[in-house]
Length: 218
Image (cartoon, rainbow, N blue to C red):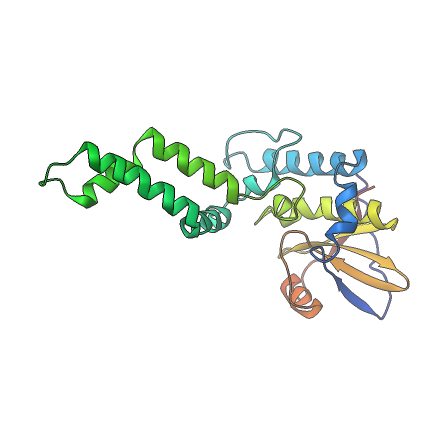
């Protein structure tokens, strides 16, 4: 990776590049050798700089979203599982099975539910639906390493560079990081980690007057 600081492009027209809307164009390049090399270098650098998070080093092929350091994905997946009607149905079936094994009128229903949560059957059920609602490989969510913008958006720059055949750079401030590139005399800003309503929202989040660094990934 070339880390030489570059001057930002001097072009008047600027636009937000929606990773979501253009994922069909980017997806064929996810496993490009150069793109994967940048991803592996960035995620390894994260693990080296933040060893307390997970206590393990990055292994090529793993899911970047799993390195999120907060509860963002845990909360989203938990809510999706709880709202899944099939999960609710199977959970109730397990409870009825447990209840039939404990017909004592003195048993408290709340205690039975707590007992259910500790059973191997429930753990397997929970894992089944956790995996169902977790980000799936090759989706945009798979790469949404929340709180890891400084690392994952190096991958963003590499991906758009290969997919669109442009020279993409990483724009990093102390607040946030995104990818930027020029195409057809327009400067675009791309962010795989977070989704923005409009360009100004992203630019505001990047921070006015923040220290700025531009560097290439190739």
